[in-house]
Image (cartoon, rainbow, N blue to C red; front, side, top):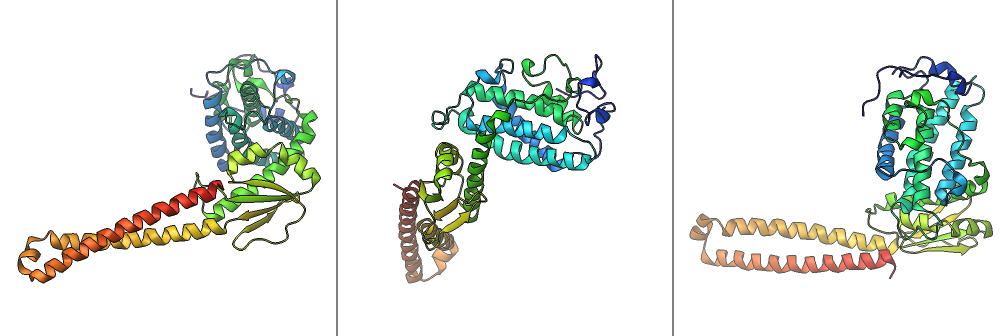
Amino acid sequence: MYPPTALPTGPYQPETLADRWRPWWDSLALNPPEPSLSAETLARLWRALKFVLMHIEPWRPSPWEPESLKLAPADRWLMERFDALLDGVSGSSEDQAAQVASLDAWVSCVWCRWYIELSKPVLYETEALAPLNGDLASSRAVMAHATGRLMRLIAPFAPALAEAIWHNLPEVCRVPCASVLQAGFPDPMGGARFQADSEAMEVAIEVLAALLGVRREAGLGQLEALPQVLAHVDAQQRSVLRDLLPYIHSIVRPGELVLVDGEPQATPEGGRRVVTSSGVVLVVELVQLEAIARDMARVRRELGEVAEAMRYVANRLENPLFVERAPSEVVASERVRYQTLEERAEGLKDELENLAQRSKRSSSNV
């Protein structure tokens, strides 16, 4: 639906707003105040919100009762991070630019970059659902109610976007306000008690970010897996990561991920070594995968050269003037050459198929 072009009619209660929000809410039409959220962040948020709406419509959550929900680790992390954000932006308004910058960074990183990705193992009901102790309905409830609260928070900066999303949320997330501009400053989600869970998830996110970086550097496709990942950890890190491994397997897709005690002795030739800010040392073995990838690139290049030569010879043989005027031995030689090239192409195709099978076995670490 289209957002309104002016403030909606009906009861307007500025006394429900946080102190630092009130000056901006009294003149909100469709002109966001300065300082505002960046265009890049709003574009990312719009894409993320389309994903959200796809997974909560036409489902209807219950009123917000977090004690009754079976929360996955990502849900607890999001709730704690959101409440921490509220604490940061609802204090003194002396430095509004810093508070808006904090909101911008939270939306871009916490919501768009990680929460959406971390919610997928549960929303897609993958094999990761059971060990995460999550529940599909609970995760949807967190997503729906958090989205409603986030729309209240960004309304002073992007009222058109916030209003459009607000009217597509389940009614229970909007009651009693017909417009987000009437809703006021959001309430906390009750995530303060999840401080330890949030800190544990931050360790896992650091590992995820590091391994995704290795994937990009290695040029792996979406369906290709890292052959083997050794995560060298201490006892506390092992305890933290053990329960969050389903997220890493679902998002990074390593062929094998092993938690190893102590520091690594050496990085294997051709491998990658990354140390996260929390001290987890990741050693990724890529030698075999890279060797196979190089061989596959070589075979594809040779296959392209052979195919080009075959097209050239075929064009000559299909030219009636060449067949009629060229000496018979030349024509015969070209036909033999085409047959030889055809056999070479078949051999290269077989070699490429074998390399692809080896790559698949290496990626899955069979």
